[in-house]
Length: 186
Image 1 (cartoon, rainbow, N blue to C red):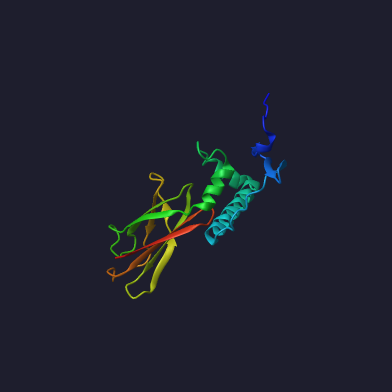
Image 2: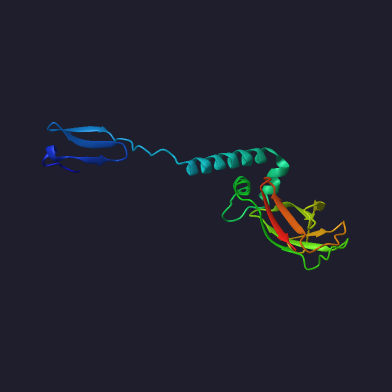
């Protein structure tokens, strides 16, 4: 039990919702004033929209049994359910870390190795070879290396006699259709 010796000196906050103030010599209990938040910046609005979009994506994935089962394979200690895995996938684009062209000499059948990773899984990788004049020679899907989860292999289908100055462009996609492109000039 608490006692107040001089109630005319009472002021402050009680709990989360009541405040006491002295107004014209009397102590008045009022609802606690709400803080006015400053308007959101353009960056904050963009982030909020990104999260709303990711949440909508994840909800749609959970309605599809096959996609829900796919995202269940990504459950970890931090991502405790398939919904969180799907949100994370929608928020984070894959990364293309490296294009290895040591085996590519411009001949049909030469291999280009691609190191691509994602916070969940890389869904597909597309490689494009452009000659030194900027003309597209070929484009196709790389094949995932079963032994190494981050490695993808693209096998050249068209000869490229002028390898020097050619460009290899690689785009990695995740299951949420986020994409990242990396180019390498030979």
